[in-house]
Length: 367
Image (cartoon, rainbow, N blue to C red; front, top):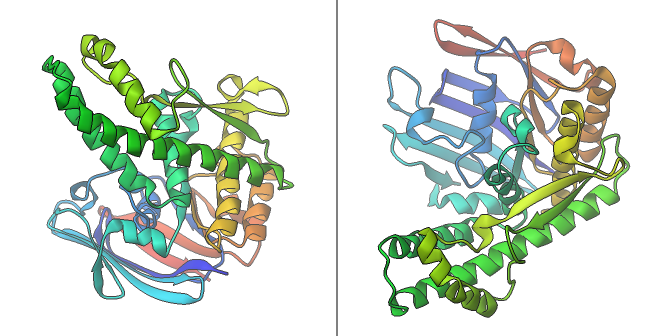
C-alpha cells in the first residue's frame, strides 16, 4: 500500500511564486542554500494533514510577500488504492479552505485520506524545553492515529477557557460550572485515553523493530495526582478542585497539565540528560516508530517530512536512517544544504535543487 504525493503545485506560497513538482513514491531530497525556500515546500506538504502545519503559522503568514494576494496549494495524492485531488487555498489571507476531489471539506477530512508526520530543527529541544512543547509533540503523534483528537482538544480548550474566565471573575455559584466541567471531563478523559494508547503503539513499534537508533521509553506524568481516566471521576475531580482553582485563577488539573518524559532505555538515562546527538537519535527513533505504527494502523506509511535531518548525524547514522526510510517504503521529503548529504540514499532518490533569485524560490528537478 502506498501514500504519496505525485504532483505538488505551489502558487504565491511563502517564497514560491509558482512551483510544480512532479514525483513518485520514492524519497525526495531537496537541497540548496539556507533561505532558498526548501522548508517552505515541506510546510506546504504538512498542510495535507489537519492542523496548522509544521510551523504552526497563520494562513496570512504563509502568503508570498509583498503581494499578499493569498495562496494556493494543489496536490495529486495517491492514497492506498485511490487518487485524490486536494486543493488548499487562502484567498487574501483568509482562513484556509480545503477541497477534496472538487468538493469543499473540513480540514479534519484530510485525516481520512492522508497521514503526515515531521521532524524539524525546532523539535531538537523536545527533551529540554517546557512541557507544552512535549504535549504538542505527543498530540501531533496522537492525531496521526486518532483523527478525532483535534476536535476533542478544541472542545476541551473551549470549555476550559470559559471555566477559567469564571474563576478569574471569582464566580462561586456551582451552577455556572457544572455543564462546563462535564464537557471538560468528557473530552479530557478521551484525550488522555488517546495519548496513552498512542504511547502503547509507539512502544510496540519500537520494540518490534531492528533499528540503529536508540529506543526511548515514554511516560505520561501529571504535576500532582494521576489524571482520572473516567469522565465521571474527572468531573468530580474538577468540582473538588474548584476552591483551589479559584485561588489560582485557572484550572489546575486536566490533560492540559500533562507532561511526557523520555528515557534512553539502553543507557538508563533521562533523555534530558543525554548528549545532543543522543537526543536527536531518540527523536528520530520516535518519528520512525510513529511511521511504522501508522503503516499498520492506516495501511500505508505516512508522508515523512524531515527538515535538515542530517544536521547532527554522521555518515553512518545518515545511512542507517536512509535504509530505514527505504525499508519502510515511505515517501520522505528531506531537506539539506547540499547533495552530498543524501549520497547514502543511492541513485533511486528523486532530487530537487532549490535556489533563490530576487526573493523568489526556484525549483529544479535534478536528473
